[in-house]
Image 1 (cartoon, rainbow, N blue to C red):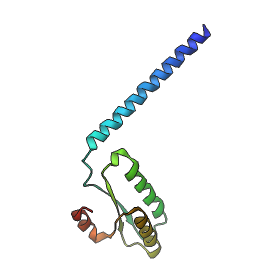
Image 2 (image 1 turned 90 degrees about the vertical axis):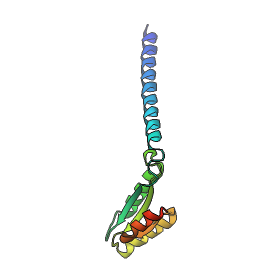
Image 3 (image 1 turned 60 degrees about the vertical axis):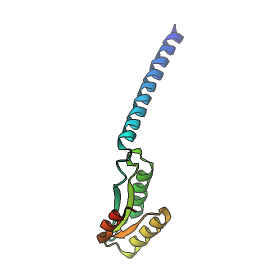
Length: 117
């Protein structure tokens, strides 16, 4: 009797987890299909400002999101020099070279967008 109750609870838990998992897959696929091709003209811009102590972490987090998040598929990333000091600018230059991202001056972002690079 006790084993039958345990089996019943197990079946209910597994069934619930299967339904939740299937729902998550459906939501992810619907987001992917609805966003497919819609974000190729979008840019994720990270601004480098003077004395920005957390720039490297922000760059890594933004890049990780842009590359791995299905909702960000097609989004391009750029780093904009918003008057950054020499140390912050060096960090940005190294990161951009490492990841193949553009590093542009604030006034030149429009040119980058128009070029579509």
